[in-house]
Length: 100
Image (cartoon, rainbow, N blue to C red; front, side):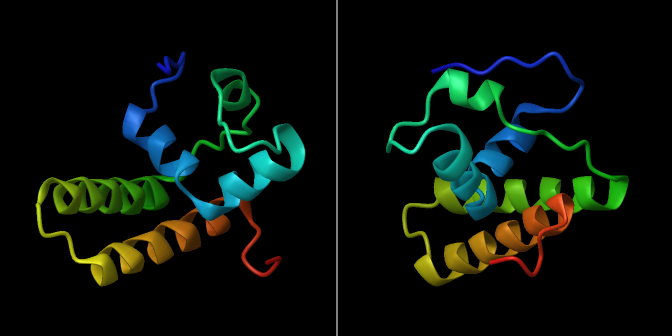
């Protein structure tokens, strides 16, 4: 599957959103409740353009995760911390911090 956008937002931003718990739950509950995420599902996602501070935090987090994945001995605990931080940032971005 390939994803092309018509916005100035970089590809890693969409990858980060799609890998968050909030977007996963959103897709499961409102778009497609099967286990297959398809390109038409991605087209239906509500994409929020972040403030500069949030964008920079997500950028650093995405870069950290990519670096960790490139290391053969990836620390699962460290990746879990990064996933937790991603989920926190995305929930904050969408304004759903206390809903689940």
